[in-house]
Length: 300
Image (tube, rainbow, N blue to C red):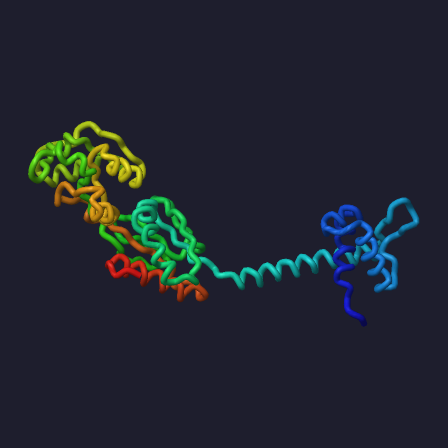
């Protein structure tokens, strides 16, 4: 038996599915006469007619309907198989979820060094939303902030950075705080910025032991990145996790006003699927090793 006329079969399937030679031609980006020629060629190959051409318009015959059903199923299976093969040939990305503070302040500023060291590792960075469950079926790492190590099935939990927070501000506010170490009263007078609520500032003033209360709340920012932006803009004093603003402190964009810290029980954790998918195990190990080298100041 000679080779199957695949182009003719494809043209016939399109005509049967769309119930029109004209529409089949549009779908296949060929002329209507070309479709008709391919269908005639298929009929000659099979030795039977597939359409009744006695009327004004060709009508598909029962034998043609049977062939069309089989072709549609077969072509769909072939298309699905091709998609699977194509996906298998593509590099699957390592998916990194990070809460906004880690994503903006720590991960993204350093990520170019990972990409330079591992140019063949495909990455996808997404937000992890505080308080929302992370789907580790499609996520390989997650940076989170918590008051104790999370406990999750199939997830390895690694302590990453401390969460202790201290009062900081833009250097432009320093003259108003006077000479010497800023007092609790001076810090309050400079204007307090709040992250979500006032509890951290209450804890800080209690720890200082000055007897001063934060008083009426100043601006409240629902996201740490908003709080940091307000502090950088010189709008007041913010309690910020030192690990997230270390680059700002090193560059002089922010200054730490007191060694007294709060929220020491909190920390940033790196969560990792355990074990990682077999095809991503090497990439996952490379990312984890890189993240801890960066944390320890060892670069890429």
